[in-house]
Amino acid sequence: MSGGGKKHRRWRLSGHKKVLEGVRTDINVTPLVDVMLVLLIIFMLMTLLMGRGQDVNLPTASNFSSEKDKSQPVVSIDLNGDLFVEKNRIGPVGPQTLKEMNEQVQAAWKAPKNPEGVGRIYLKADSKLDYAKVYPVVEYMNKEMAMQQIDLAITKASKE
Image (tube, rainbow, N blue to C red; front, side, top):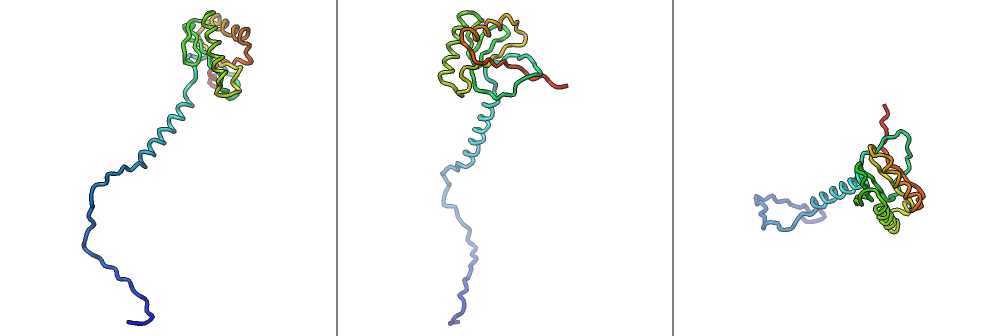
């Protein structure tokens, strides 16, 4: 067949199997990257869900503000009357611990997470704590620290 005909390609099927030349020593990093990204997302979400400040049993209230968090410093008072700034225990409420609280809050305001949180405090007090132990803290914040705003932490009352 000479002339203008099409050339046909012949396919040969041989009975030879492919032979592996050796063991692959390189690492497949795709599954590793997938797992690490999932872990990163989980840790990011858990960080957002974790509460700030010392854990205390908060009082319940049905009226509350839906204002977003300004990342202001968190001051907590537990059932024993111990004062905390974020998770740092300062000690029982007294003149010295109130001064220490002021210093730690001022330091937090100098390097704020959110500029809107400067001049504000988030106060958490145990629901079973006598108000006589909370009052000196609020009074100190008002008179000595000249607070712009004190946000009180509560638990939303269940609607039944």
